[in-house]
Length: 215
Image (cartoon, rainbow, N blue to C red; front, top):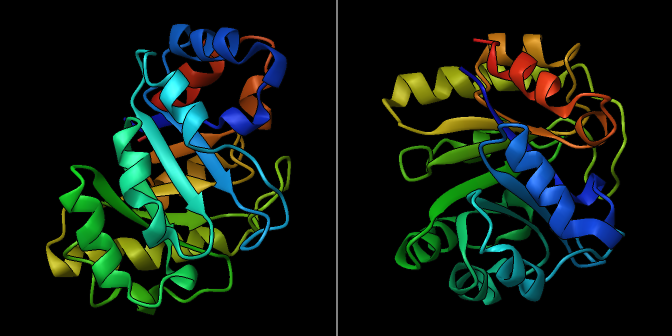
């Protein structure tokens, strides 16, 4: 069964508490935070204070750090309740060290890849990570359409994981809906970040159930 992580970025910021409760009631498995710094990507979004405030909710927190020098903030995001911390391969000079730091902070470690980044950068850390996040759109903005080639990247990473005997799962983020998700799950994705399509769905529970049914 695929798991679902609603991206809070697509929610109504004036009703954050209500939006979180709505996603929990819809059966979501995680709550996904797109942390943007205005440098690695153009926009600025959430910080540690937002995660701390939402850590009281029933959903585990999935922190996707789209920031430069993420090593400076890993311990802070762990301290405010993140269960998963994902850094970008493109933003880490010492990727293996960042992964070790995430684990030392007591969190699951993920590595994210932008659409043009080769899966090869994961080869020598594949046994150390808990999650590989495939960006299926260019990061920085919500509501984009999925880049078709992303499904092939998911398949490439799944083969790499299997060959290494790794326990890592594959997460996908960007343009995920009930039409695009089946191909991603078929290729090996098991954690689906859903934003605009989920928050804009007439029936959020039915949307989540549809993604859960994919395997």
